[in-house]
Length: 455
Ligand SMILES: Nc1ncnc2c1ncn2[C@@H]1O[C@H](COP(=O)(O)OP(=O)(O)OP(=O)(O)O)[C@@H](O)[C@H]1O
Image (tube, rainbow, N blue to C red; front, side):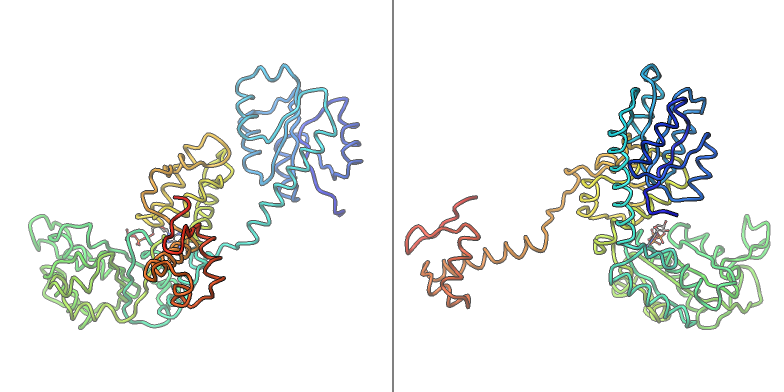
């Protein structure tokens, strides 16, 4: 195999085909050809290509299939066609949305070569970008920042012990995913994982949901029902929104945790059940304990080990990686024209405060991929126009600069604008103070006054 960049040529230029291939080879390309789209797919599966050319001359291929091939491949394509073919509006739409370029006859080989070199360079850039930041999808959880590495480390540790784990974090941060990860890593992995959202059920139902009931235990109990605790026997029960549990049910749960037995509603016998309890809430449970809404003894029972998942806004460096992770996931599900995120969209995603955390990110990315009419997702597709960023965002650099400027102004004011005294107070030399004043555009109009030279 040579080291030449590989170009896939699909379809044929008829009589000009041989000459075209020879000229492109002279220009240093390794050309693979495919007569049909299915051959093209096979070639792409066999070998990595840098770019593609689709000859639409007298092509009988289905345009939708052509579009699909281009979108699914991980490289740029150009189309070669004849002028009259441009009268087809469907073809024009596809040319404009998924191809990087097209050329109608007569073919200009130099231009084709140049465009394909650009295409190959784009592909290289994308490959470098994706290898530069490997996606850490441990336990199907993406996270590269130290705070998430710490979460993964804690998950690993708590998974090997059988004690209850309390998972805290804002809504949509990945608490259930963490619970599933703990279960999957534990010795109970082959037994069931059962998740119950304690906040989603009315209090009269949750008792029967958790503990089950006997036939005829209450009006409407026409059948015996196994509760979720029993359903999780041998495995793990994840109690989400535990803070919403009524005080009465808190007593029952505490009893179960202490005695490891349950009693179905209406039953006389106690049943022994071996279940590991993981619980989570997005509310402050300590505060609920202080306010008497949550039993302290139950809180301590549940809170033997803790996993705390940080909000998305505190995982700045992961936002882009997560967005791309979900993008790749959804693009697999459905063939879409969209190729990625525009730089502006990425910048706004980094600035946004993500109140709904990862769940919100997933929803915005999914919607944007459907709404996007061009190749790159724009802020409007994500619903993240500048005006929605109602937070006054400053970078650390800006914050430092502001603090420095504030300190200079205060010191100069306190010392009646005497530079020597202000410099002494600030612990810098006079020269440094002058330099800093210049940096912050603080001009000294006289020995006794300073002013801002610009707003
Ligand atoms: N680190 C992650 N990497 C990839 N996907 C994630 C990550 N964290 C969460 N998700 C996904 O985000 C969505 C929300 O996660 P999950 O349901 O676990 O959050 P939660 O904190 O339990 O939410 P709630 O408080 O509303 O119950 C899920 O689709 C989950 O798969």
